[in-house]
Length: 140
Image (tube, rainbow, N blue to C red; front, side):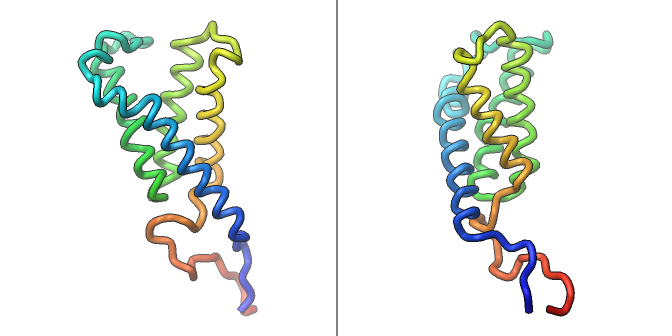
């Protein structure tokens, strides 16, 4: 039977590398420090919409800790990218609107990584992927 829409292994490897590196960077630089230093973060977090520090910090922790774990294992990848994209857009557009591209390059690069993953999905190198999951059409 002829397979359609299957990806070469190097594309799956590339998507896995993008998921792994993007998530580890987000966790290490932003997510885990917010968890480990929660009380201190409550005093420092920006509150662009006037919701209070808890309502600003909790969505950031969800987007920067919980969502990357789902993306790392390749489960609900596209859906898990959306809170990350939202938090990054809030940070870049509302919290730091005066930043130059050079000052905000890490945020913009993370936005590129997670938007790409939202568009492409996780690839085949993920938890629960079967070898026979390619879409098949016709009687090949």
